[in-house]
Length: 270
Length: 122
Image 1: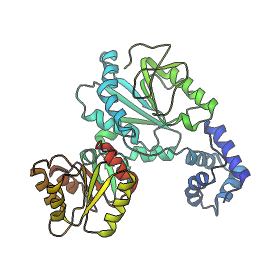
Image 2: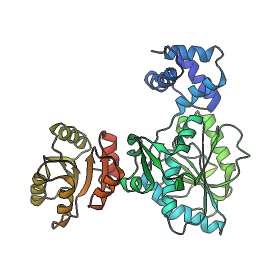
Image 3: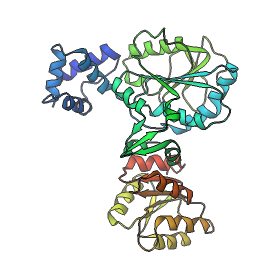
C-alpha cells in the first residue's frame, strides 16, 4: 500500500501537469489506477513507481502516471437522451445558422473515443444534418491510440452501445469489435492538455466537455471554461456533464441538458 | 413494480440474474426453457424478458418468434442474454423480434444499462 507522502506527491504532480484534482486520501483509487502502469513499466510496486517519479524519472513516465489518474469512464452514449437531442435539435440548428458551412464539433476530453464515436454513428445515419467536422482530443496518447484504432473489447461494446448500433457499425475481428472505417474516418484526433494555451485550436460550434470539470482543481476548471468560451464560434454551444455547471460567462440554453452558450456571443444556438 | 421473466436453463445464471434484477427494483419470475416461459406469458405478460438462446424444449429464437405472434406478445421488451457473440447471430435475434442483446459474461451495469436504454428503469 502507498504511503501518505507518496500519494500527496502524486497529487501535486497531477495538479501541476494537468490541473487534475487527486484526493491523496483515496488510497484504493490511486493504487488501482497506478497498478497497471507499475506492472507495464516493470516496477516491483506502486511505491517504487512513485519513488522513480520523485527522483527524476523521464517526462514520459511522469505523463503516463498523470494520464493513468485522469482516465475517464469509457461508455458509449453516456446519458443517451442527450445524444438524441444533439442530433435531432442542436446540430441541425447549428447547421442552419452556419448556412452551408460545416458544423465543427470538438470532444475535448475524449478518452478512448466512445463519446465522439457515439455522436459520429448517429450523424452518419442522420438525414439532413448537413456537413459536420468532428475533432477529438485527450491528454493521453495511449487513450488516443486506442480511440483511433476503433477496436473495443466485448465488455466495452456492451457499455451503453445499443445492439442495433453494434451490428450496424462494427465488425468482429477475432475477440475484438472494430468500428467501421466510414465512422472512424469522420473524426480527427489530437493530443491536447486543456490547461495549456488553446488559442490556436480554432473555433467550434459545439464543444463537448462532459464530466471533466468535476475532476479538476477549481483554478484549472475556471481556466478550462475560460478557454472553452474563447474557442466557441459565435452562436456556438458548450455541453457539460449532467451534474456540472458553467461559470457566469455562460448561460444555460436547454432545460434538460447542461448545454451552455457564451453570454458574450449568445445568439440562438439551440 | 415492473416484472422481469428470466429464461435460462442454468440455475446459476437465473440466480445471478435474479439478484441483479431485484436490486434494480424488478419483480422476478424464472423459467428453465421456452415452453415454461410461454406458459408464464400466456398467464400474464411481463414487462421484460431476459432470454437465453440455447435451451432444451424451446430455444430463445423460437420463443421470441412465437411470443411476438401472441395477443399482447409485442409488449414485453425482450433482451437476449447468450454466449453467442457473432454479429450474424445478434442480427438474427434482433430480426426475430428481440429488442436488445447481451453477450455473456455480463454484469449488473450491463443489464442496468440495457434496461434503461429500453425505457425500463424500474
